[in-house]
Image (cartoon, rainbow, N blue to C red; front, side, top):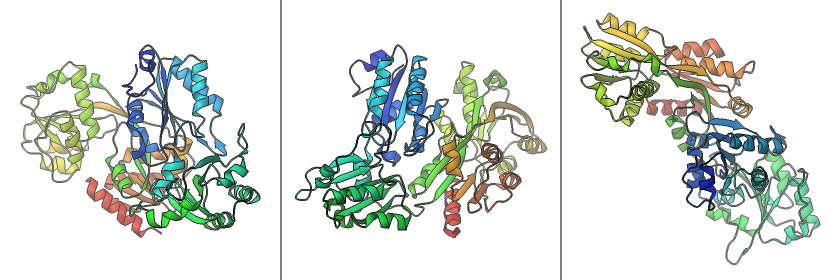
Length: 511
């Protein structure tokens, strides 16, 4: 049951083959690209992912379809679950034979309580592997152009916790901290004024440079500079809050010359993308490349129903296989595999894909579409599909699909068999995701179902009045209005480029 474990401790893979295993993985400081290859491999093979608030949610895309995702919400001052509960959860899942990834922000052994979790595994005789991550003590500062060491300026650095009030936390030796060439303080924003006062009392000069880096390495990174004597007042004035890394020392002055990270045009904007957990979100990746902080709201779960698809009737019985969504492609080929068939069963059958996204998924199965309409809509597909008179059309859809496409094809003389090849059910969202959705600048709705399911997931809570609500297509807009009372913009061209352009324009007009 183990994953490929190059670089793992000797023997851990062999033990994992016989039962459950825990991987304690450092997720890095915020930029999803800073996850290590070992961390990615662990996530790709996980049965269960237990993740913190500071672990980038985008990394959950690496988890397999069907993996259990458990949010435990550990952040300074706000813990959804106690540490002992998290350790018990890890052990229970591993003892049940599960491959468990404990995904933690930064590095698990740098004030991350990873050692405590490893010891809990050892005490329970559960095999574990530690996958180091890029610590924010170095990574966040590097994105702000601040090296922790610099020849002739600092040959060493000291990392200390700033939240001495944490249960079981050891007291910081501030006399030692005041003498450090480079001092890095983690988890210290809530006690910033107190920490600076401790440094001053220990003899640190009030004019010593200080920089605070909030959400370091993320697109919404914020940097604030000052001195030991001024930084607390400046942070209060600018409303700078946790999480942030604080660096004290002359190296902080190098940021003026070494700052290199350029947030994109959507930096600081929060965009909600509603999708299924099973789908890879190309839209999310494009928005992230433009600097947006993307909140993925997987309110939809798809479940293939191969028993509904009579695949043995495809060859010789149908002239067209019409695929109206990427999910329909996956569901149909899952039915083929279940029946012990492959693409040879499609001999003599022409295949239509509703648009580029559906065609791309089709190509992943080794098949090219014979027809793609000029617009990626069911209406265009029904209007433009050639050779429909007398044609036998096989149409795999979801359990929630209506008959508009099949009715339109029948009006053009086709004989259509529509089957529910997969079902769509609602997926509940954890409190962290719901909180992020309610802080969004823009919410996208890719389908009417996504709108209904997001409305259900929010319960009696509502979206902020300042958030722009953007729908894709007329039918989706109608349902968004039913669920949320308004639509601020409708995208009529569902192609990825058109959607991204429209979202940029909406955000540019937003206050």
